[in-house]
Length: 117
Image (cartoon, rainbow, N blue to C red; front, top):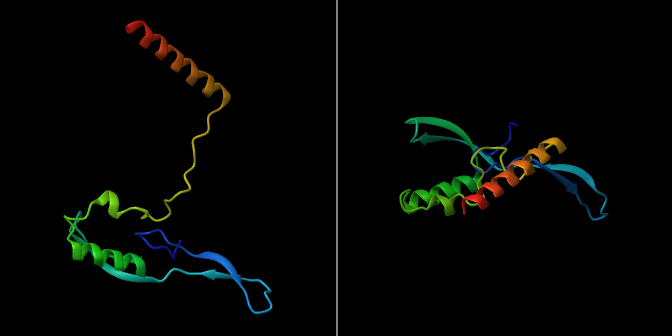
């Protein structure tokens, strides 16, 4: 996707225009993106990134606080590490045969744990 923030994962969404008559017509909501040159400390290079205005403000806040003071677990709450990653994660589906095999191995482990105790 072209219009995606590389830090937060914000992307174009769809909605409706609602005039006074309340007749709905489709429209798109685009993120407020900017191309910024950012220094990547891991590679030691300057790279161009597409960032939303919110992401830029967040980075400025982190820089003001000092990178060492910011706890990464708290700081990245709600921030996708890679564009496109988010709350929609596909679960691995098991076939009935695989489910039976999994239950059998769990039962064997329970027996082994019961014998060793």
